[in-house]
Length: 431
Ligand code: NIG
Ligand code: FE
Image 1 (cartoon, protein in one colour):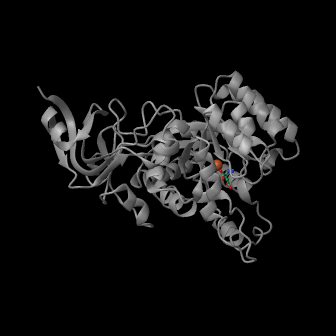
Image 2: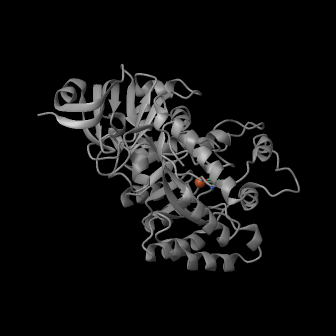
Image 3: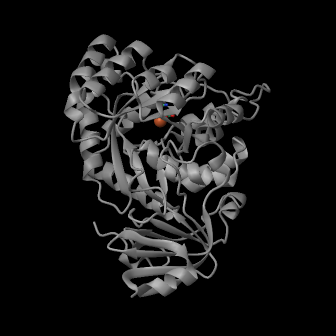
């Protein structure tokens, strides 16, 4: 007796499931993803109800809609686990100088402080409209779940506004809110660093029920290990899972701190040393790598004096894999260091800059990203029982997506089993 389903996708050239073990795809498994030739997927009630080859599923499913993939690649949607979504303004003029080694235009705030000022000057409706447009672009490029950090609030009132707006987003992309009150010292409180930190520590428990994670920027450009430990301890006491921007511009011991504080993910880790990497892997924290930053800031190519800022990044990625860590890839979408909302671009960059295989990049961007957001039970792979978040590609193989670069190769995106972008998107969001 066949099972009745809503939708059956058949004849996928490759069905890349990204199914993996309890810690995601790690070590040798990164090179050996599950790929079903002539694959099929059955969807019902917004969930995946069967996965296998086309002949088997055609025999055991009775579908309302049967769609022939005509040999195309079918994958899970990307899970983008490190995203500074809600913010105002852009920093293109600053970037145009920065990439040539020149200081920011004088007289105006630069860096995170500039975006804090732009954000404060942007009203709620405009911030929401902008975030929705960015989510549209993410979705069109294959992302179906994203994180959304605060962090561009000039002070805590603004941080709460950004968290409230994040909660008000209504979009087919699933949004996971992260509270990042210690990103940079707000210019309005520049005179009182200690007082600001005290306020942040006191505020953290109020994020319960509003944010899925608390994050800190633990770096010479952000906050010290001691300061971040206070924030992370407050999060731990409140039962809030933790993320850490760790050791991005120098090794300050942030990765070790994050592992000690049981962070779900430890992000950047550009300068983490061998002992910290061991601690990260042993804790089961996910290392989130952000090749868009290395690309945008030119960290792997010589500057005009011939100096390469971070030649060790490909080796660092390999070290993490060799240590048995769960490694994820993410955009770090933000207006300063990585203005791309496209995970497709990030996969292309991971292959070119970090020298990872297409197979590894795909799993880092799907199932391992889901682990970085604590959502692996429901997202990140094509497995029975998980949300039916599926991408159909214009090419036949996962390796083709990372081979051809610079164009959008998504044909259509389904969220909860319904087409929401690309071909057949009549059902696109209502908001
Ligand atoms: O993740 N590292 C800190 N925060 C961002 C950069 C923010 C900015 O420049 O606006 C990041 O890279
Ligand atoms: Fe970031």
